[in-house]
Length: 295
Ligand code: ADP
Ligand code: MG
Image (tube, rainbow, N blue to C red):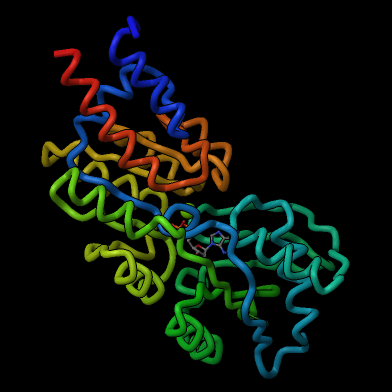
């Protein structure tokens, strides 16, 4: 072809399932020397499902009431965990209540007014503070040791139950980690807002040793800034609103298209449109070849 090498690299990347927003991105992709991967929706398929319904002893909710409360609150959220909760309620035929004053805190959870109560659904580590909340802590530990993401449900500030949620590893996750390790000479780093126990378990399965768990969006951003200070050029791959600041600050930010939040897709330099993680190392390789043709 007579196309300039970087333009034809864009076209080739597109054929492999990655849409780069400019030819500069293709050039930058060839320069990256460290990779950060998000967990939920990036290393995992991003279609998690509810495995456990644990109403707390002493609360007046049963399994169905707990799920209905959580799903009503989560309904407006685009987070994969929220979709899992809403789907589980649908499968049980539970009609949802109206939610007012919905707010979401990326990396933490959501809050809304349901049935005249303030309901909060989200990260136990962020929400469970104080000795008064001891029973849910034990339930959370049991779920997390089983590799689940635990989600706590509060009504008017009182914990009423915990949900266990599981997600499948992408079939190409381990191969992608291996390919990126060969390309950069260093294993990718896992950046996740999820709990450390579940993160360690998953990291071990795919060949990642360095993990940073329990992160808020600004903590993911701080990691990228830290590498930048060290003169490193980071590739960040993520899918969520919580990944957007890190994706924006990275040398190259890539969003997973299928599970991706609107904000992550807008912010990213490139989008994985074919739902395969292995397209990422494939376009890094492509970009390196194109750069050799340019210089
Ligand atoms: P990851 O970095 O793995 O993609 P997130 O940063 O999106 O994870 O979420 C981190 C944690 O915050 C979740 O594990 C969960 O505990 C909590 N969380 C965030 N959003 C929600 C939500 N909509 N519903 C329930 N929990 C949530
Ligand atoms: Mg994610």
